[in-house]
Length: 124
Image 1: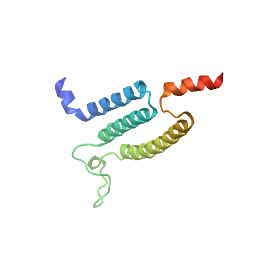
Image 2: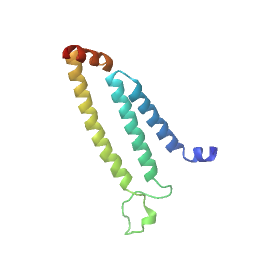
Image 3: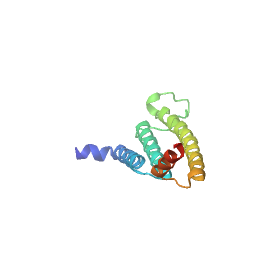
Image 4: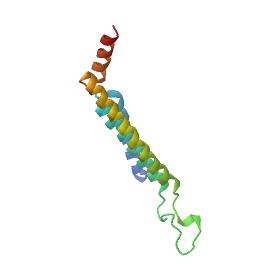
């Protein structure tokens, strides 16, 4: 079992990062810390995809000297997924931060429990 963990250390690191981010997302009450947790989870997924797309001994999928042999190149799809995911992640983070700023301006806190208490008081 130890040999498999050592051979796949990148995947293990990606899973640990995902777990840390997920725990942070669930356990924190501060909205900024929740956003950071979500970004850590995103980064873990990008690391995992990048590791799965790379094959040792192969080169980037840029055709050189007319060599069309697919066995020579790495798979470009995971790289494209990572780039697309980064763009989406930045957009989602910007939206979450802007909503957090609006919540702070209205309730003067970023603590989710305090915001829910203030919302219940407003509803009465």
